[in-house]
Amino acid sequence: MKQSQLFYKTLKEAPKTAEIISHKLLLRAGFIFQLAAGIYEFLPLGWKVHKKIENIIREEMEKIGAQEVFLATLQPKEIWQRTDRWEKMAPPIFKLKDRHRKDFALGPTHEEVITQLAKLKIQSYKDLPLYLFQIQSKFRNEMRPSGGLLRVREFLMKDLYSFHSSEKDFENYFEKVANSYEKIFQRCELETIKSEASGGPFTEVGAKTYEFQIPAPAGEDKILFCQKCEYAINLETAKIRNICPKCKGKLKKKNTIEVGHIFSLGTKYSKALNLYFIDKDGFKKPVIMGCYGIGLGRLMGTIVEIHHDQKGIIWPKEVVPFLIHLIQIEHNFRVKKVAEKLYQNLQKKDLEVLYDDRAEKTPGEKFADADLIGIPYRIVVSEKTLKKDSVEVKKRSEKKIKLIKIKQLPRFLNKILC
Ligand SMILES: [Zn+2]
Image (cartoon, rainbow, N blue to C red; front, side, top):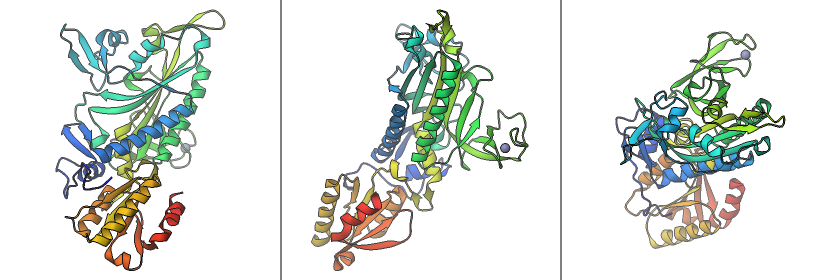
């Protein structure tokens, strides 16, 4: 992509309403645009990153046997009344009426809708287990959307639902999903803490649920974690506040961002919506369910909260908008020719390149934009580098600049990119 053609605009200053670092940087670097409070649009750079995150999640979901579906956003009121959640959801549901004055919800979540769908197939124990997931818009009528992409009113979420004939089968899969989540967050270069939590209006009282929390000052959650063992719990859920119930070690408090949540749903939805199966023993039983969510935008915001410096974003390599930022300095014939050729060659090797071909910008402005956008490798072509038949290569996360002969560049890139 040529930067002169790219639809984006960097800003010197973030708007005053942006308080946390990821919000400021994503706005300033031209990744997102705010339409209204808690409602964001993704520009090409932002959407590229969002899609990379989506693909990581999809790959990991498919590895644990989940099939992708796409459920409805407009959901009839009756289905929500059957689980007693039309009035009780928190944050509240966005509600609307159709032209016949019938009530609908803009789906804040999909437990009701997926349970209804699963009835299509599940009749006997032979139809279980079943794992279905989707990546789809959710709408939440938040009191106070905040923190840029961290708390919004409309966002894409991956939600996986599992259906089982026994508690034991559910527990095995629950562990599998927990491991899959660890992998997803590792691929985003995030270190998570798995903490015990409450399921709120989603599940039965006392059900097993875990949150995946990332320690960050901007986080709205607070967890208690043990300094000796792996025990961690959401402060809201904790009964004991200073001593670890597992090893008696000291508990410490940390601000965190919740990036994933996995729930045991038990039989709450299958009973309410009549999802039963005939077991091996011939008895009719309610299906046991689990539910597992990740908000994609929040994950993107969290990556920026963790991976940045004073100059801008530093994208982890699996979620980059582009891999290489090729920058042409001076716009004379020779520099332009070499840069153009390099751009073509890198693209032929299937490398994602953003080529800064803008003639009206100074080198200083180009470097500042490059640091703000956060592409991992910067290659500079200038009159000075061409005197030595070379280009400058710099990693966004390092200070060191290397002069590499143009002829040796393919080999050098092979080495660093593999
Ligand atoms: Zn402990």
